[in-house]
Length: 210
Image (cartoon, rainbow, N blue to C red; front, side):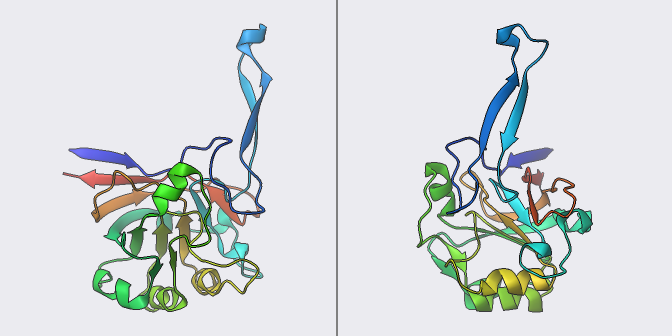
């Protein structure tokens, strides 16, 4: 029997936001309560709001936009690995989890707790630069983390993002993994088809096949 596990953040005005980014907000344009024919809302947010995917164009000049990315990256087998005791996940930490059959990996840390509280902290879980290099070396197609960025530091060179995105590795950020037991699943996490988009919110789901 197939089980679907929603690993997406709820988008609301209280959602965690990357410093300097556009907070999520919504307002009614039309309302049934006001006697109008339907409910209709306006939404304002960043292309990197909530659970979202980064496209190469996010950091790489001339990189592919989100609407140009092949959809098969975002659907298929995925390994969820346990790193709840790690703040910085290194290549050495990852090696035991990246056997030949793994092409997508999601790392469970304590980042989901910060997401749940709506708190951005500078000491959030993240990947090291050598972890990013290992993902590329191993041919990993998609990397996910339960915080809204895979990298620490602002106003720097962002080596993790640049290394991954320059090699076409999809980055899935902002995952809610509280209810997930590490193991092997099928992932479905498709972006919106945004013209010239540098990223996109998505609805990320793990499929457990019994």
